[in-house]
Image (cartoon, rainbow, N blue to C red):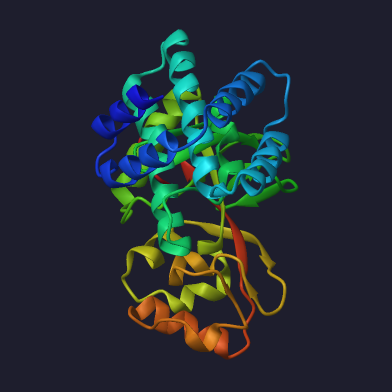
Length: 296
């Protein structure tokens, strides 16, 4: 495991501090806990144990053994990525793509540090499809093929059928995103997944909740990203809740702490004003199209 973590540092830029911290945590675990992580990893990849059930067990174990669950989860996720590297090699998938995909752990470590003060992960459930070779990172975007999650519709002259194969994209928290980054990622995904003709691309994200468009500064990257999509559906969160607030403010957020939220950026100022005005939060489902070379 330590050898893999050292290679991780070499291949994922900027990860050294977080991974070194996790190495210290791992070295402090008992032999029984280290063996448990390895055994549950083997059980998952052999199909014997459900991934969610393993995370539930790790949570109970962390409480019983008085260790941090977020850190323990991160170690388990990295153990699984170590195994996934072998599967990439077996399937002759580009090693660069592997490290781009595995870099998601580092992004999650940073998020956890910001929100909870410790290098770990509070969203370990997210990683399962990486290990199942369903989701991959292609440059700036993470992508997977899914069935179109809506009824038949026509958008900008393009007909999309219910359950048609489409590309679903995710935007990891790895920095700014430009239109050129999106095009480059889509071009790689188009070829990798074997699309022909016009590829329908969807994104279901808090970033695309229609009411947020006014909160994004004019000419900002966020507004430009939003404007690429045609929003076909939106869902409101529970009143007084902002499930994705930690992405904006670095803390878990609901109406109990709206008044105390930071206002260090224009985005934070805009969102805080929006929240204190009693507005709903939510997410939106957006659609765009790609012809193999460019967004159309």
